Image 1 (tube, helix red, strand yellow):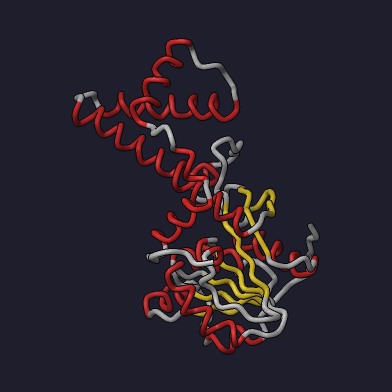
Image 2 (cartoon, rainbow, N blue to C red):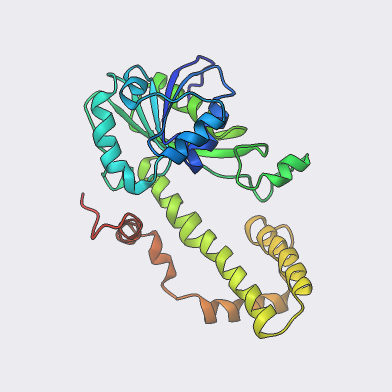
Length: 287
């Protein structure tokens, strides 16, 4: 992958939204020329309160090397239909989730390059050094993280623009890992939302059962769950220490009681399409 220290012209659409503010806060610290676009009055207020000037969309994207679409997935189809025709030849569309790109919902145009990027968020195994790093569980503020990116181009110069933008908007960045748009969709949502986030929610439900149904004191339940979750992840993902024989038996009981035998079907293409169709409020994903 070719990296660069060059600066670029970047337009951020949805600059006053939740993700747009994160992206804009980081871009404001760079030497890139950045234009901020926001339609909602509340988002406009947040942008100006942060000391940034607003620009109308046609002006912002006219000379942009890359346009960051920090808008919800469900809005990407109409927004790209409006914006892509206004972009200059050779410019890059960068979306921050793969769902709409994988589903073919984005407006495309010959000479306009499509790219997707998503933050990995700071690793549970990150060696944090400061209170600010410990407080930054999402990333993009103080705790270093990796990012995943995909681009529909073999042009090294265009890839360098995407990488420079990704490193800026998700800073501080350790590594940028390159995959295909389909592979990024397999990672997000299947691996990390369908599996990891679901398990996190399940842990919280189990904690609630221990406290409110079984009557265990909350402090005791939280302490043992938080500590054992770290051990479970360290042992399960890295093999730091072997699980005890008794624990393995309990794990088998948990798998038999909670996990369906065919659960790995979620990694099939048809199941990915079904999952993304639900997320995008579509009947089906057409190819």
